[in-house]
Length: 382
Image (cartoon, rainbow, N blue to C red; front, top):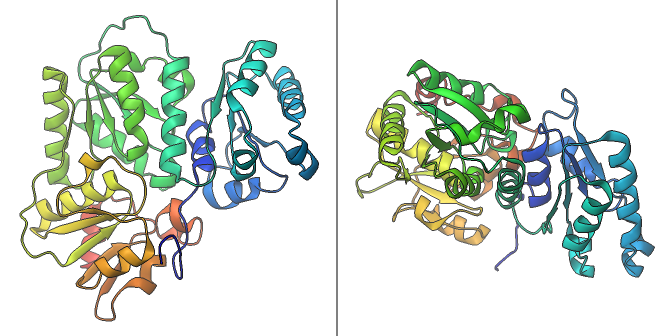
C-alpha cells in the first residue's frame, strides 16, 4: 500500500533541513509550529545543539492562533527578538499546521524585513518533504541574497565545498577529512557550506575556481553560484583514494573548461548483488569507490529527493517501503542504515552505515568517516 510504512522510519523533514543548513551562519531561524515541536529538531536532527550557539526558535503557535490566523503575533515576536539579538538575517520555516491554514510566509517575511531592515527569508516548507529540500533551498537562498553580486577575482585552484551538513556527514570529522583531501593536492578551500565556515568565509565564495557539491543538498547552491559568478561545479563526495583521483581530475577539468559535471565513473552493468540505500550523491560516490577499489559493482536505491541525472540507469529512486522491499529481494549485501534491517531478505547481509538524517542519534557513535579511511570500513565489513 503506497505511502504506508510498516517497518521504516522517516528522514529528517524539510523544516529541520532549513535549521541545519543555516545553523552556523549568524542568522535567526524560526520554525512556525506549536510549542515543544522544536525538540524533534534539537534532540534528533542537530548534533551541534549542545556545543554551538545558534538562534533557532519556535513560534509557539497556539490552537486559537491557528484557527483565527493571527499572523500579527508571529510578526511582532520575531521583530522584537530581532531588535534584541541583531541577527545577520531572519529565516522563517513552515510546518504542517501553517501549510493547512494557508499561512502567507512571503507577506510575513516582507513585513518583518520592512520593520527590521534585516534580510528575511520565507521558506515554504511543510514537513512533508525531506531535509534535502529544506537545506537545499536554505543554502541557495543565502547564496542568492547574502553574497555580493560584484564580479570576483578568481583564485586559481580554489574550491568551495557545498552541501556539507551534519544530517549527511554527522560530526565525526568527515568534513575536515574532505578539506584535507583537497588541500593535500594543492587546492585552497575557501568555504564549506555550511559546517566549519564563518559567514565571512562564505562571502568569498565567488572567488572560487570551481565548486564541489558533496551531497544533493549542495546542488541548488551550486546552480545559484554558477548563475551569479559563472563558477562550474563537480558533483561527488571524496571517498577512497582511487575515486578521489577521479574527483580531483574532474575539478581541474571543470576549472579549465568551465563545464559542470558529476564525477561518477561508468560501472559495468553486470549482475549486481550489492545494494546501497541512502542519499544519492554520497551513495553513488560510495558505489564508485567500491567499484574502483575492489572491482565490485553496486546499485543505489535513493528513497529521498534527488535530481534524476545523479542516478545511473541501474539505480532507482524508490520513496515507498513496498518498492524498496521488492527491490531488495535479490540482494546479497545491503549497505544501509541499520533501521533498514527489517526489509532485508533472510539470506542478505547488512553492512551498517548509519545516517544521521535517518536514525538520528541512535547510531551516531557508529557513523564512520568514510572520507578518511574507506578501506578500513570495507575490509571490516565485506
